[in-house]
Amino acid sequence: MSENERTNTFCGTPEYLAPELLIGQGYTKTVDWWTLGVLLYEMMTGLPPFYDENTNEMYRKILQDELKFPEDVSPVAKSLLRGLLTREPNERLGNNGSEEIKNHPFFASIDWRKLNQKKLQPPYKPPVVSAYDTQNFDDEFTSEVPQESIVDESQISSTMQEQFVGFTYNPANEHMGESYTGTSLL
Image 1 (cartoon, helix red, strand yellow):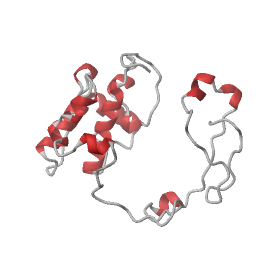
Image 2 (image 1 turned 90 degrees about the horizontal axis):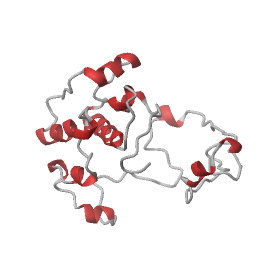
Image 3 (image 1 turned 180 degrees about the vertical axis):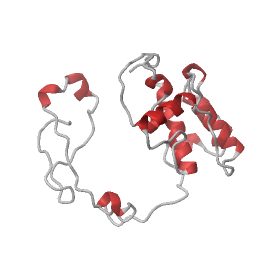
């Protein structure tokens, strides 16, 4: 999808869907900035901003409810979240490119050049014993039995396949149970 190209596909996790997607008006890449806002809000507060157990009610809230914040969210964080969670896509923070977001005061302490060069140390590094170490994941998820979603290769266009060039897939893995061994990347 190019910078200003629009699409109409209805897809995504309900909590993270942007208003323009819900009303079917077509959308651009600015939906990703909305989703970033939802993710940041959830990381700061523990729940997505318009969460409701009832999906239809959640959609209504996404479209209509005022954005509310717990008291402990800082003013600069509120400013960032309000910008990202602006319902009008053309007014949303990031609509004019990622530099808008990177230049927001919330990110003032980040040296983006060093981050891009992977020269910044993270504030927390979880202990990891091996590539298969799951001690940092909740048992709720690690006790689930993995299931593959196999798609008939003939149903996947070459254009779709090209999007995954360079990705690696390790089919047989003792920690993942029996895995698909097809040659396709999907």
